[in-house]
Length: 59
Image (cartoon, rainbow, N blue to C red; front, side, top):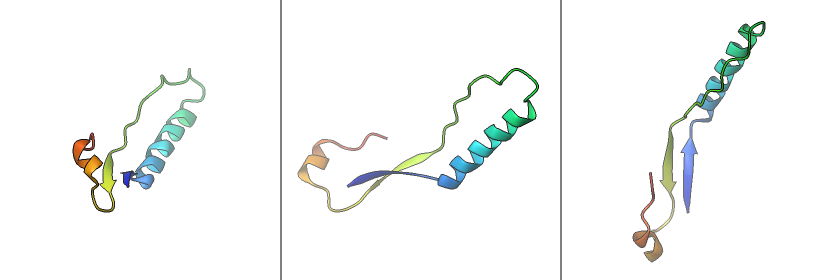
């Protein structure tokens, strides 16, 4: 099994920053859309199968 792990606390911090920024500039035009990237990592569990060797994970 392969999972993608991320820092949920960091997602919360980023969301709070975006919300506060929007609330502070409520009287102005809304800020332009922004993309926030939170680091992730691939976590592999269990023994690798023969299929896994043929298709390594993309990072």
